[in-house]
Image (cartoon, rainbow, N blue to C red; front, side, top):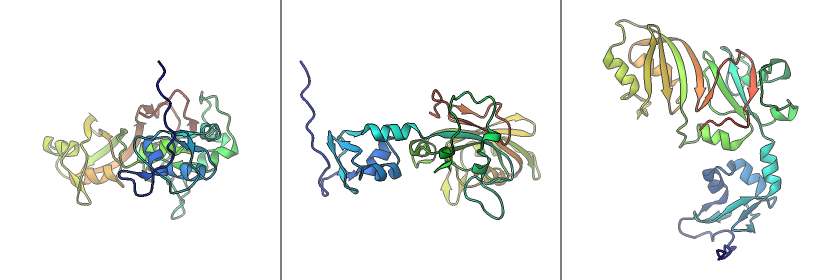
Length: 263
């Protein structure tokens, strides 16, 4: 026997217990970013339980089924994600203090010749291409720039659990780092009055530590090291989730392939 068809209820009443804004629910489910949802809802590209919802601010219940029109799915499929090996001296986001933003490095001349994504560079790929996370001006390594709000939320959303791995060159500001200091780097430090999530920190060699974090507070690694008497002399991000920096040369970029996932 076939299951009975789902009743097309549409949006939930404003006062319905447990309801939330449709755009927020879409973001929560990873269907679209809030910006995308707010763009597509007035166009009639979003359905709730099979019924078109075109009013911004509409609310839904957790159990309701949300789908996208083919036009929205096509638009989403055209959005690209870029992996850049950011050099030292470039800022991740907006230009500041005379330093240029890393996005200006994304151009045909700097595309890695070993980019096997099969995606052809278009000027439209630069539109709304924003960093999903930051990398300090004096740090190098993997920086993600994306047009896809789903990826941005996955990497920098409040509930993100995606690992970031760094190789960090350090020197002691006095006594060598003790076992107790290393244990604190792994768990027990706080920044700005807030306890840090557990990390994985280990020695790679006598001058270099490997950090694996699940959060990204401003200058977090440098401040963690300072708290245990270490000075950071070099910092390189080598992995985000399951995506590796690999052999991507400094100052060059490639597209995220269709078969790659951060988590």
